[in-house]
Amino acid sequence: MIEELQMIYDELKGSNTKSIQHFENELVKVRAGKATPSMLNGVMVEYYGSMTPLQQVANVATSDARTITVQPWERNMLNEIAKGIINSNLGFAPQNNGEILIISVPPLTEERRKELVKKAKSEAENAKVGIRNNRKDALDMVKDLKADGLSEDLAKNAETEVQNITNSFISKIDDLMEIKEKEIMTV
Image (cartoon, rainbow, N blue to C red; front, side, top):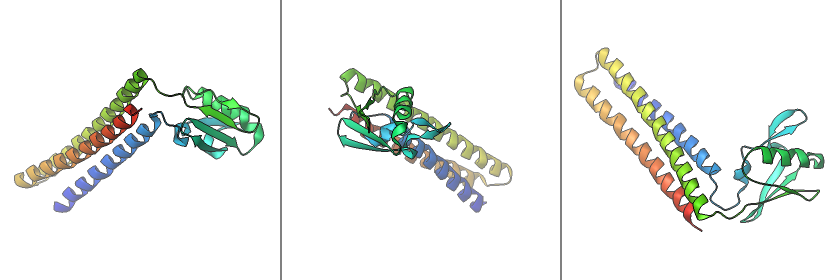
């Protein structure tokens, strides 16, 4: 029975780690006013008839804190890449100079910063819901073991351990959110 409990804890930690990674990936998409190549991570471009991630058809870099440059590996892809960036609804209007695309990242207004914090908090809440669902699954597994003959004391200890694991992951989300909020609100 102890091995089964350990497997439940390990599975819970693994699921929660995936939830945290997903949350971190979502936070990267919430821009904090500084230009980063990762802002274009979700952009898909039509490349010879199939949708391809931007990073597979061009080099994405930042030349300064407000400018992203996109240099395609094939010059004839400039218009397709520009179309992909516009269609991604990131609010960017790339400028084509014939060789590269230049994207100016506008500074954020106070109102926009508050909207971004709200969006980030919404992502944090989604991650917490995922972690709570993982807790529920783990507690259900503990109940099943209890029905199979796990002692009352071990079941109580297991429930406490599951809650402790859950609390530690939720506090990680709160810490990440606090860092992101400071990053967004810093002018």
